[in-house]
Length: 231
Image (cartoon, rainbow, N blue to C red; front, side, top):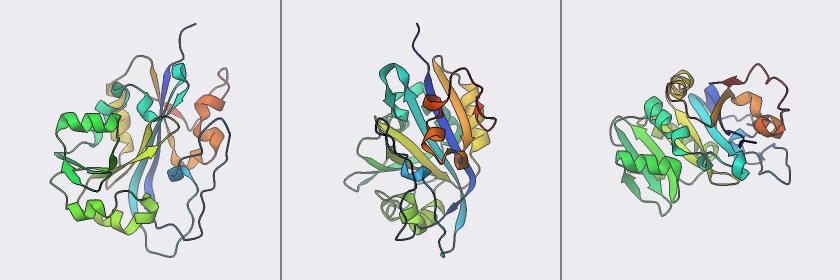
């Protein structure tokens, strides 16, 4: 029997409220022993009295059934990196490394970081170099805990990427100043990859473990819910 195809999942929320987390907020996620917890960025948001700004949020996750691996970066680079560059890439890329240093990235380095974000706390793309202090103010913090600093960073940057530890490797969550979904879906369609299935669904529909891991939980002989689109 041939191996099951890899699965890429793109969760989108457009627009999304970028709001600070309240001090007593805890992620509301279901647990299952043999799978990782739901990523924090897909856990329930709480109401907050502070002002909020609309942004455009995406979360990219993946599974590699042949190796029983869970994490976007366990997929081949071709499954998502060229499409991300086509849809979201701007003239300048930079990152904040784990020690807190800011460095500009050449195109080949961007590809490597997107597929293996070791030592990377934050990845940014923009039309021109971004202020280093604005980047370090956000790096290494959960987006909702750095909401005001992230708002300031998005005043200069086009898209800000956060690596999210997965069960195996990493996922990516990102925030953009402009709508992303249509551009990224078109980029995925323009670059089909043999052995990889790609699915797009609203962020709001992934608020439980079974819905986030629908590729594992859903019966193979049943049609997918109408809100899940394969591209």
